[in-house]
Image (tube, rainbow, N blue to C red; front, top):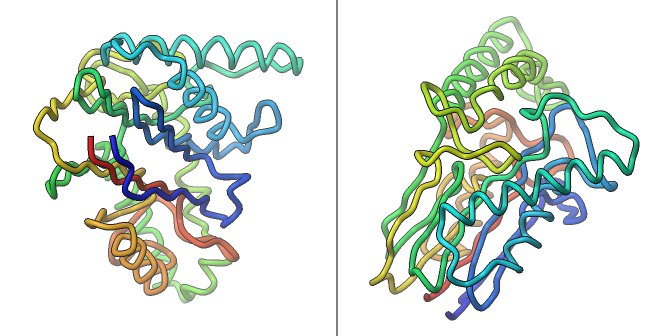
Length: 273
């Protein structure tokens, strides 16, 4: 494999808080996106999302080269569950229901199988053809937030007011918490994620890429993935500059907080398999 370029940065600009992680070994390339805990929970001194991406990343580094996508999903799930419980026990903490455990999205390229494995919603591009994904319930949250912010503006608030105090956070947080029941649910509104629960086959996506010349992996901190990192960064910078609330051009479930560099952590890696 040849790594052409790669980049990862946290939304705060401080990579110590970056919940994304890029993993490169001789057998695998992965982009991991730790799920931000709106409750602010942490383990081993790390936010839940960073804890999840760290544990999953270290597990990928130890994976057998011949492992299948299905087996990898199980192995990463079991590893994260074991480490989560061990960390919580060591810190004398009682964890909430398993739906609230640390979680991460994963996008993995297997050299041995020449396949892309996706769990959750990261983006990949094969020879210029992009494959994007957004969960059904996330589309609902985005539209609800967008309508709510427009209502706040209609009441007289300004975008500057809402950047300083995004009141949609309090609206969405309880809903997002309730809908975590759909994590690894094999039914309507279900979605896949590595969080310690069994991931149904339908949420372990396997994409053969035997003839791929160039592949790009990106976390969902990039709303659009261009053919180079420079172009991708340029698009994102223009987007967050023109619409920092992230509710007009390409609506998201959150905007750019004051002092932050973007609305979400982001990672990009372009490589030749």
